[in-house]
Image (tube, rainbow, N blue to C red):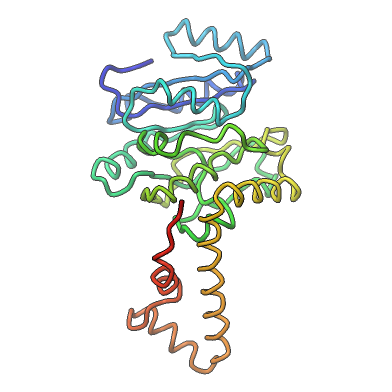
Length: 288
């Protein structure tokens, strides 16, 4: 389903999630969205007969459906974005949903060049008793990216971000972390992030989901090592800054009687806080 003057391309990877994809599609209420939208579904080598039947039904309804051999969400997103006509991209997992307001609130920020990537907070649903799957989304901080992800893949961003990043990494050691790597690459490429502190998409928690298989400490260490090696200069620069900030914070604690006064001066802008000081001190570092 492509509009000749598409503004936003919604790319939906689907792997054996035929039972949920209609909910995802129904959440894209075109009549409530102020911009021309196209929907691209990428079948990531589904083996489930019900899913394949559902995708055939969607093709009969003129949805754009691309089939590929199983390669994970990164490869599926790349395949969809490759043919996308929109200036902006919104990846949406087949088992999740969005609010029409997401696009309506994100596009004006992008159109005014206030940011290159706009993301929001999730509303969790499904197996919500699984608390360790309910992640935190936070305002962008380049230092924080070396310790963990700041945003889900469900963000609205300029297609040029994907082009300059070289797409999603299809060689990640575990599926489900491609977005973290993508945001690191975007930060290295000096793209601007904007966080809308509203729940504008719905994230389904499934007890047997793909990422739950990798939800353990060993996998986290493997992913972290992979990213640190791939983005070595970036990680080194940020970790040096973090170390500097921690040292300054510890030094301030040693001066405990006057620490509240110091932090008041930071808040008033009379003194420059340690994060800004660190970024300025190490601004000459080049990140490749």
